[in-house]
Amino acid sequence: MNSFFRTFIVSGIIIGITFVICFSWSHVKGAPWIPTRMKKVRKMLTLANIQPDEVIYDLGCGDGRFMVIAARKFDAKAVGIENNFLLYLWYQLLITILGLRRRIKVIYGNFFKLDLSNADVVICYLLQDTNDRLEEKLIQELKPTARVVSNSFVFHNLAVIIENTDLGLFVYRC
Image 1 (cartoon, helix red, strand yellow):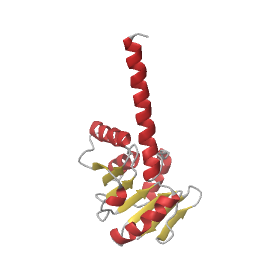
Image 2 (cartoon, one colour):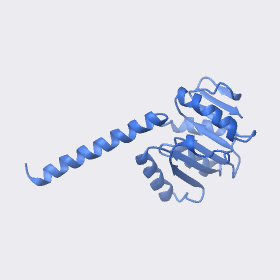
Image 3 (cartoon, helix red, strand yellow):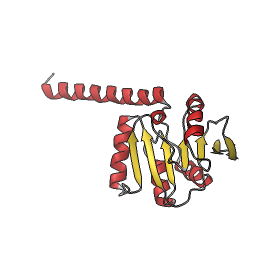
Image 4 (tube, helix red, strand yellow):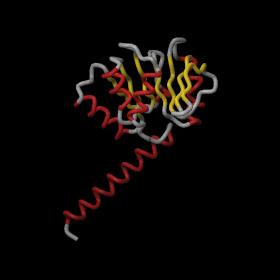
């Protein structure tokens, strides 16, 4: 086997292992990345009643679709938090290409270790056990007027203000 093919195969194996580690890591640390359909993204943001210049946090922002729509359609300021390095890099590239750096900030890190008190709206598409661990942090850090929008999974101790069971969407007030 010549050196070009050997290098090509080794590079492919390294890239493949990197993807498996990155995607497994995000599952272990919160939830696997499963993109939300754009129709549901718009519905979640609409249900949250986002006003211009409100600050939206997306916990586990993935490819950034919530933040892009929040900034463009609702004129919100958006903060995405992502612990998957490949998705974080993608998100950085996306907001640069779209010219949204003034409205969107992306943070590489663990949302359990970050201060969320600046949020007017928090978007969650996590797993139930992650929501259970996150709930007390939201109660302690968010202002009373903040809304939390969850896709598919619930928060047991937050006040439900809107529930769309057909779509599995829940809006809470802290």
